[in-house]
Length: 304
Image 1 (cartoon, rainbow, N blue to C red):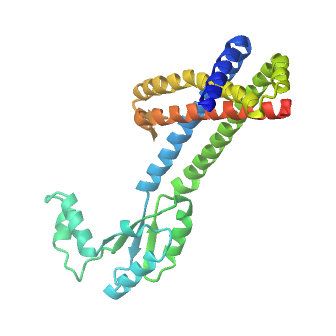
Image 2 (tube, rainbow, N blue to C red; image 1 turned 180 degrees about the vertical axis):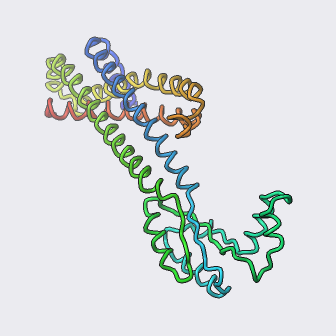
């Protein structure tokens, strides 16, 4: 019961402090709000770029062509060597022999086409098509090295993949993800700094009150707690506007852009539940940063 009373009293003191130092609290909330709005934008952009990269990883495949004169034993050996490569998704390996490819060509072309006629009259012995393996990789960053390893396998005549995508686009998106991560971390640090300064001014304004509390034997924990709670609520209040802007703004942007960024290039993540996750991250960042900033300031400037 005593612990509950102490917590309730400190909760009340924290709210009183917010209103007592209203101008400082508003300044901190506004700064936190602006910072979290930018954090939200960075998170949304980073998440969409990351989602686009994953879509590429899931759709990008390697075609491995096998010598048309390869025996069944040699083809099985090639398959075993492919499965030994760590970056290959073994459960997604697709094998198509010459006869399967011939049937697919016939199916995809009308009976009136000349290609259909050629394939229909093609005997197994005269089949000039090359057996192929269709592969998916675990890590697109290692796709080029994986392709080079595949080329070295005996009886593999050619290896094809979207080299331009790997060489040009993926490195750019990797840089974008790293930059946005640095921005988010930097903005969180700025938020901590702003809250620290607000709490520091509040501490100086209540210096006499704190001295009295220490003289009557109030524990360090009881003195610190109101400031930590105050920082917690400043962070939560500061995250309200960014959360509303995130949910409402992203939904509008998604509708206006018809679900795509940069002219149907990057498919946007569906608003729900994505914006809920981002909002949860914002309120978590705001509250934790507020608490940490307050605690660090009390400990540093009061030395209690």
